[in-house]
Image 1 (cartoon, rainbow over the protein chains, first blue to last red):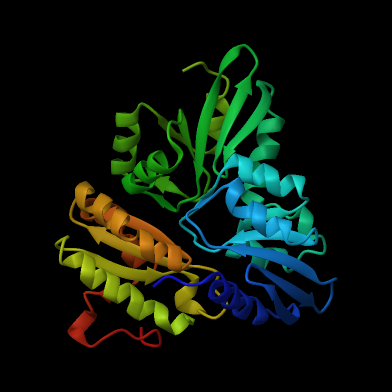
Image 2: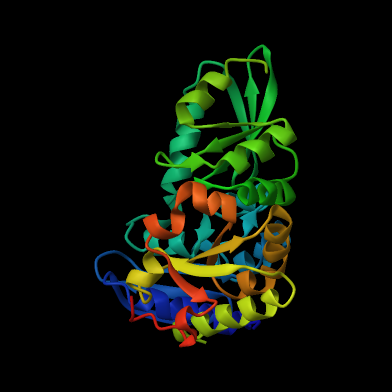
Length: 218
Length: 108
């Protein structure tokens, strides 16, 4: 079942090669590939395949070339630590999964690519009158610093049907959080998801209610 | 390793897990069903009898999730009934194999 880094990168290359924006693709290293595009300049992507992306996972990949513009982690059921995201940023690289890499292929400036979901939430939080700062703990977890109120740690989950398993898996993966932001505009939580959240003492909020929650202590 | 290997790999994993966890149903849904070549990930729904079974299935799926870009939704039977998810999302059952005739991406 396990694949070597070369096999994973080759599999990603085959996916990317089928995109209409792509003219050619070359594996340049077991963890890197060069994407030649029809309209925009070529770019280099780093590829990893782990459950948890840490600094130690991406450091050797980034060290192979200053030209890496995005690092993609293949498994969808995976997560990035805040420290790994910061290292990618210091390198001037975007980060994400295979879906993000495929989206970035269509962007002229790959380095500035940010998943729309993250961009929307960060922008909304920075514009909130109570928010004085944001610390990114993981890809889906932020610590929100608030004026005159305790900091609040939340996880954002992008499910159409948020289940009890989604919330339990988020707790296993990310540890403690004070609130769940259900970040899919059409999403809803099942009764079981609400029960699981209650048992953890956390609320589940859609975007509008989450912004209101930030004004309150509890 | 290619896309065609994923369905047998999931069905094999489902069969293995089902020897330890009774009464599960496995479905594919989303963009992989419509256009597997262009899809970035593979949406998989597993319906389980209980929360405990859901936790066991989640744990047993770790290796498969590292090998493939699987996006997993695990529901209890109550949640599946509450949301009618399998029907509303046009999910296609892959295990137990409907009719016991195997699974084909080209048949609906």
